[in-house]
Length: 226
Image (cartoon, rainbow, N blue to C red):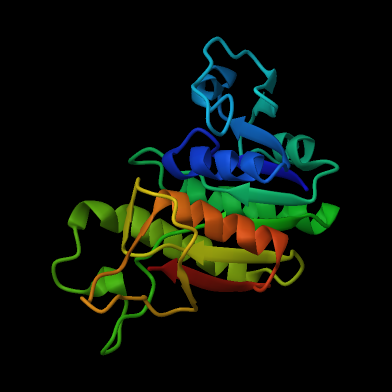
């Protein structure tokens, strides 16, 4: 497949790129500035390159682009089979999630390219009712990004033309091992036998690429956890 990844230099985006390359997909990695793409893995089992200024990097096509700019998006997804967005805006700019989603949805609807979005866990429902982000003790510093993810998901659900799917991770999303194992849910937070909700960023990338290769979700949200 030909896959464009927005937010390719972020914690999740880097792992998505690596997972896609390991499956021999053709990847175009997009970040706001080309110099940030220097940290991408040169090979799935290799080190990292420096000095990237655009072009092809370790078998990955790299380009500077902005997911909130319609011209950049159209240029980045032309001729692609799939778009994955895993952008994470800086504090104070959380609203960019919504503008990026709106732009990507419109561009994908126009081109017929499928869109997978990595969102947040805060809007998942929990046992007993209500949302995770509304539970007592939910970290206050996460509320701005959680609220932006709620609006991001709402923008997706309001769209009836693009072929999109929205992935909410488990409550705890951290770097870890790639096991290739996970459970899939819908709108409710998945927890294990100990009541914990977690998944590694590596296995989140696995879940995204599994969905890319064998689509099961269309115009809906799903979640994954151990």
